[in-house]
Image (cartoon, rainbow, N blue to C red; front, side, top):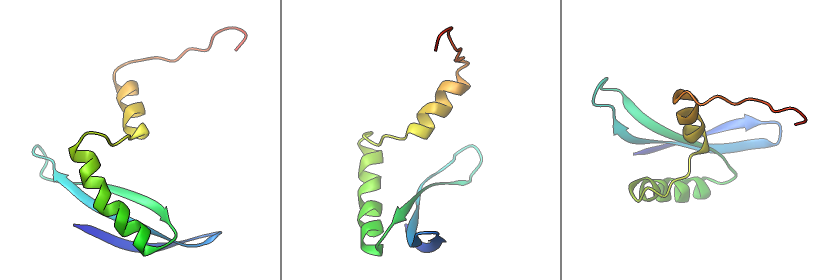
Length: 83
């Protein structure tokens, strides 16, 4: 189930939604996805309908999760000379 709310920015009022996607079997806590930056509630509702399908089909691209996984795996980033 999605919940919708508004928040204030310098550019004006924007919308967001939070969607319960599952429950963590180990801790029993809810897992949620939050998406922000919608100008209209209708846009947020459309995205909230689309998100579960993307998650189910494994086509959802979450760069933040990818980066966290890389860092947890012990991958180190080093700067090379001249860069």
